[in-house]
Image (cartoon, rainbow, N blue to C red; front, side, top):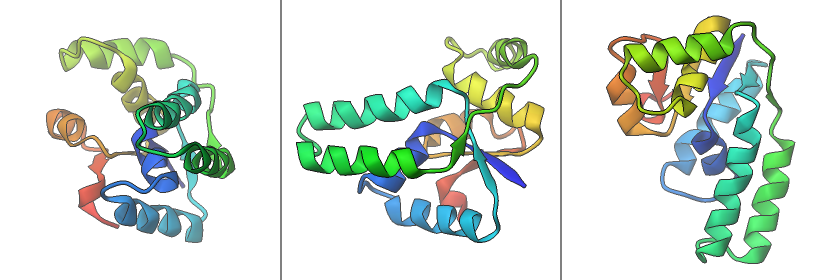
Length: 142
């Protein structure tokens, strides 16, 4: 079994934020059931960029940012190569009238791998959940 996770979930796992407790419980469940975590390849840079931004804005001390970065490097996040990912992301972005494809790449990956997509982004989940039944928000619980 596998789940597609967005960068926001990983950031909440490694840096204390609102809802980090929910994310901790999700990741613990996935670990105990040997569920594979997947994301698009750019998610790695997205996670690291968010952590750097938090350090730059003073939301994390330099030491906390380094610890969070180290923890993020230990998350067993796979970035599978999936045929037609780019095309499916484009189709989803068009279908849902999304102005950018970043989020639709996560959605396309989950769709093509036939797994759930978990996000910390309430706005995204509310916007697409009706059309894409595999989308889950952290408030959905475990």
